[in-house]
Length: 107
Length: 121
Image 1 (spheres, rainbow over the protein chains, first blue to last red):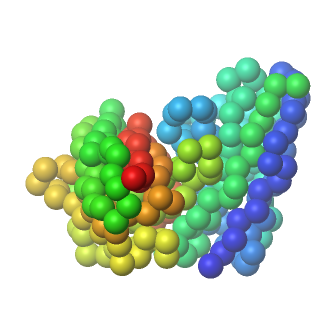
Image 2: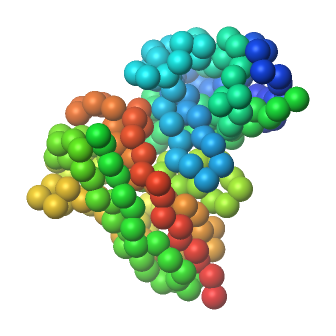
């Protein structure tokens, strides 16, 4: 099975900060990676798919990059609505799985 | 717009069974693959199962293989998850989710609000 490792697990940042979250796969997954945002008590929301494709309606301050085993989600200027938990997810195989999550907190 | 509404959650004893449903509307249900994903209290997301748009292919996480069965009724626009031999570690909010494309796999574009399953004696 492919293991997905996110870092950091928690991140403290201020409004306006540039934030980067890293996701590493235990083996190459090409570009078969998605990013989701989840707020407390709510369902996850798709942000990025195929490593760098922005989902319709998602603000352009969100971007994804990477391929193979290393990927990043970047928020160019953190907004109050962005404080949430972020998950990466690989779908290179018919056993997709998620990273452990990164909680973005207010500094 | 796409709407997914889960139901069927509740409290069940270890070893018991439960069937979850996910009623879909706002899109052509019979054209999209569907997933179940769960989240234990205070924990991360865990993919559970997938079914192709026509029901011809099904995939399961190792943790539920042989105990859970995913199915769909395209005439009723409804997705199901039959859960047998339930364990305490199956306690979670269960979400149904729709694929981004009709033949795609792995990009979960739309999600329901979830239904809570608690396995406890």
